[in-house]
Length: 292
Image 1 (cartoon, one colour):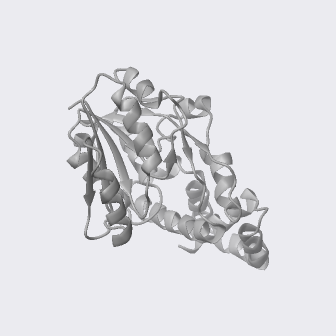
Image 2: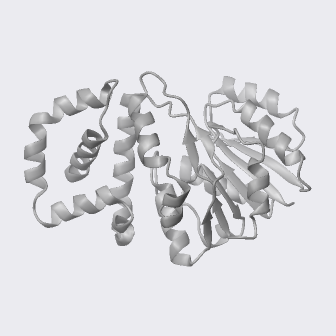
Image 3: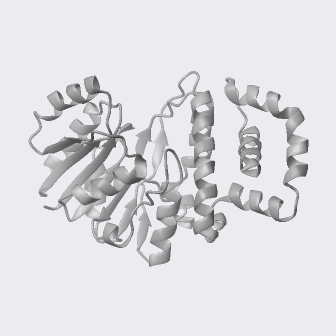
């Protein structure tokens, strides 16, 4: 088989995305499959998905009995994929390009890993912090991604040879949300796996409400601290971690927290409100790291 289009799924019904992907793949001279693994969604959602997906002959839908998390899920997709190449996507995406798969397929011999980038959908009320962070920090231009190709690796939209996963897997010690992509990109660079950043974005829905995104951000920071112990050079790739380590190394963590605490409630109110500031978000995250 030539190509496996792989989507991890949890509590989602990505019917429009699947139909677009299938329509585009049908136009290519490739033998392909769409592989979806459901990470133990609610029974009613899995049942509805099963009813829809079983109509599609080139789609495999596997439902796990227990939730295994993001990193293990991506490794499971790689193990189950039958294609020589893998197109790895998130399920909450929107495909707005008519030649999305064609762009990847045409560039498949240019590097072992191709990364397409992403755009952010319209602002959703109550999700202002997630939207702002996505627009300002994650929606990088092609030139910015090309300047730091491995540091700009993102799991939600990449194309690779399946053989890449024989050299490197996602770290299954990472629990919950955040930074499996950071570590995977670092691993690709260490191994000398060729990586090319392309202008082939998917549209990402920034739909985490402000409170939920703050909690996920703390989860991601906790992952960073855990990973730093095993990968000391990780701080070179993550600016806020580097700053936290420098403050701790110079015994300035207590000084920062002493200055931060009087403004803690004001900062939290801003981040939960309709006009959050990324500067406050950085202070909030730095404070969390210095508590770890």
